[in-house]
Structures are given as structure tokens and as C-alpha cells.
Amino acid sequence: MEKLKKKVIIDCDPGADDGLALMLALHCPELDIRAVTVVAGNRNVDVCVKNALKILEHYGRGDIPVYKGTGNPLMKTLPQDDVYSGKDGMAEVFLPYGGAEPANGKAVRKIEELAEEQPGEIHIISIAPMTNIALAILGEPEIKEKIASIITINGCYGVARSGQFRSRTEWNVYVDPDAAKIVLESGIPVYAMGVDVTEQIPQDLYSRLLCSSEKGSMHWHYLEAAGNFLRGRGLNPAGLFVDVMAVAWACDESMAKFAEGKVLVERFGEVSSGRTVFDQSGNINNKSRLFAAYEYDFEKLRKLLIERVFK
Ligand SMILES: [Ca+2]
Image (cartoon, rainbow, N blue to C red; front, side, top):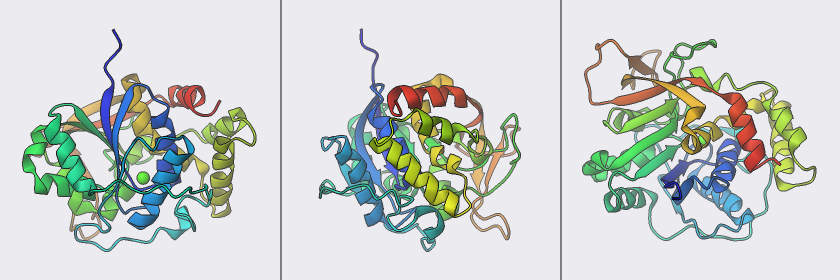
């Protein structure tokens, strides 16, 4: 019998790193992508919608609906990320755009509808600020019991077995800490890959994938252009592979190991706004069910990316 596919919503803010995550997701028969919902983050929401459409267009996947979501964080002003995202919001890879349009309807409503229609079956891959998901929870609180899980690149939990970060503000929480608080403390099971794990992406992953790609292919061009853009700004191209970690784990749950605990999101700290406080000792007493990755198999990630995308 064919293994059941995982039904997913990909909530994203493309972003060159989200673009790679979408590329992998489109090559994962393990996933049934019910919708791509877009939120403001790396750039304003219209730029991010267009970038999601460009990736789907390239693969002829107009059958997957892209929904435009929220244009601003719940309480804060959207920060400008010009350094990392460039003119096209995608590290200046300048993918062609054939004119595809987003689906009718709003991303927040679509998240609510899919969760209501298929209780216990929808997983949300959240690789962006959590504004859309928070608004869906505020609009229809009963979906907290209906969303199967949230798989996310989010926060910093200090559980990694190695590495340097114990506590640090992570970008997606920093952009909308109010939304992160609503989602992470909702009681929905959250599988989070925090900065303490994502910062351990091997330095040579980028060059190894570039070498394995067929020169001149879209994948090769994408990696080369984004890598050149980032290096030109003194940034490490390994950062391109953060968001894809969530998709890879959704495909293959042996990719990471998790520690279960509770989490609190700091919204107003004098120096700690956007921090995620993780606790396994019973000091935090809320509904949260947080599974924080403490180990990630980057060699397995490399093999998956080569097998599915960069061949
Ligand atoms: Ca992202």
C-alpha cells in the first residue's frame, strides 16, 4: 500500500532560502502540498507572492494555489531586509516571471478552512514570521485542536548538542514576536528547528551542491547567483539552506532529533524581545507543546537535496 502523504500548507516569505525550500517540497512525493500561503517577511508580501509564483511556474505547478497573506506584523512595523534579499527579494537570482496570479481568497482564511475541513491531517510548514498562522488561530480558535502540527524554522532553544548559540533572537520571531507567542504557546504540537541547530549547516554544503548541479540548469544558476550575491555582502551562502531544513524533515523524520518542553516568547524584554525561552523543568506552565531540534543530520540533507533537486 502506498504510504500516506503528509498534507501540508507551506507558509513562507520567499526569500531565496524559502525558494529552495519550495523547490525541494515540489520534489517530495511524501508531501501533498494543499496550499502555499505567503506572508510579509523577507520583503513586502506582494514581492514574496510573486517569488513563490515564479518557483511554481518554473516547475509547471500552477495546480498548487498560492494565497496572499498578511502584509504587516501584528503590532510591529515590518523591518526592511535589503541586505539579505536584494532587489528581487530573492538574493537577485532574477527568476523569470510568466504572469501567474495568486489564487482568489486570503491566506489566513485558507489556513482556517483547510484545518477545519481535515481535522488532524494538516501540517503547516512555517518558514516565515507567524503572522498568518496567528491570525488564523485568533479568527477560528478551534483550529488549535485541528492542526496536526507545525514544522518550523523559528526561535532558539539552546538544546543543540554542539554549536555556539544557547539563546539568541531569531529572525522570524524578531519580525513578529506577538504572532510567534500566539502560535508557539497555542498547544499545537510545534517541531522547531532553532538557530542553535540551523547555524550548524556545514560551510561546504553550498559548494558541494553547486558542484553536483548541472552547469547552466536553473538550479545551478539559482545557487550561483544567490551565492555570489550573499558573498558580495560578506554573508555566508550556507544561510540559503535554513528554510529547506523544515521541508526535509517533513519528508524524512529521521533527519532530526527533538527535545520536548514548554516555551514562552518574550515580547517586551528590555534586551530580549523576540527570545524563545525553552523549559523542560516545569517552570513554565502553559499549553505549549514544543519539540526543539537538538541534532540535525546535514549529510542526509545533502543527499536528499542532490537526489531530489541538484542532480
Ligand atoms: Ca523564510
